[in-house]
Amino acid sequence: MGEDAGGGAGNAGEAMNRVESLAIEGWSPEFGSPVETERDDVPAAQVDAGAELPPEEWRPLAAAADAPAPARVYFVDGVRRIEARVWMSHGGEPSLGICASYGAGVVRCGRRAEIVSASVRRGFFGKAGVPALVTRAGTFAACPVAADDIQQLVNGLQERMGQLEIEVAETALPSASRPSRGDALMVVDGPLRGSQRIAGATGYVKSHRVQYLSGGPRATVARLGPGQRTPVFLIQTTWTRYSWYLRLTEAEGHPWAGIVRCEAWHDTGLDQVKRIANATAAVLPRFASEPHKDDRAPQNLYPIAGLERELRRRLGDTGVVYRALRRAADDYRPPT
Image (cartoon, rainbow, N blue to C red; front, side, top):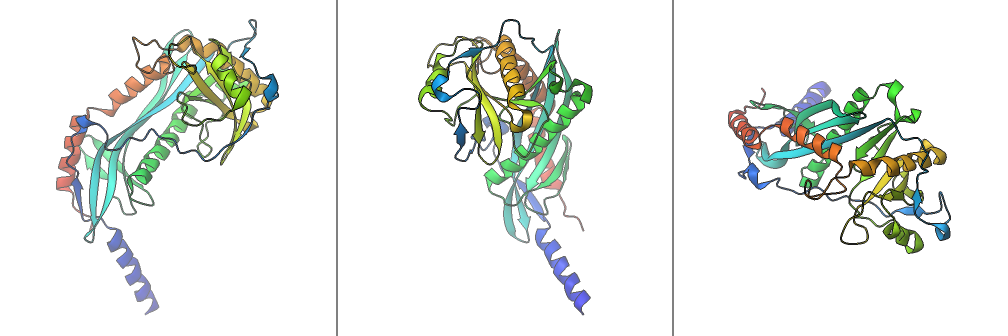
């Protein structure tokens, strides 16, 4: 009797999670994603501005003219695209999901720039029981998340894209080519993630939604010249990392125009972090984009922009993918 009761409870749970029908929300992909997801939620930060220099001694720093520059620079980036919202019926109870495409790749810049690793995936994000959805545009793998609010769904998508960035970086960089050897620099577009770690990576942050500095150190950022950086400082939120600001080029507008922020893992060691910071100041300005070629100039570096274009091309035509999803939803039958 106990076994029967347990089996009945298990079957009831399976029935509750089983998706009985799918409905694609009727918005057209050319109007863009149904949600903007560029906001970063950062908890209140504790900052030690004196990691490299005392705050009262902060000044613009430049790499020594004879400092060795890395022979190769690797750029890691990912793209994502929400293809459709999907309503799923669980025993009459609707829940929201999203079908999304995402990709990640690595560009190596030495004597020339070339994509050395790239991969594209598709996922169906929803609560437990979300099925894999086979379409003419490819299979959207089942990607369960804890809740069906749109931000949680997007968080699941971001997590999968971050995991893919790690995969392509490890594929592109054999152990003999790791940046820790000093002859290579690896730059990840966006902030480093404490839970998703690419060994030896330097985070590259183009926007400034959070202000980490105040007083003299903050004023130093506005005084930076092209190819100059601030002293290294330490940031602690839910995890710890070193950071510094640098100016890529002269840029018109506000005092922080052309400024980016870089990050390095806290366990890299301060001396090594300073070498990395000098390398970014010496090397990254040569990749800065120009306004007549990129709306996000100069912060959107040319190798990153080129990689993004190629990855989006590999995601496929939005209209084709959307129509394939609608047909697959219409033909969906729950597994027996």
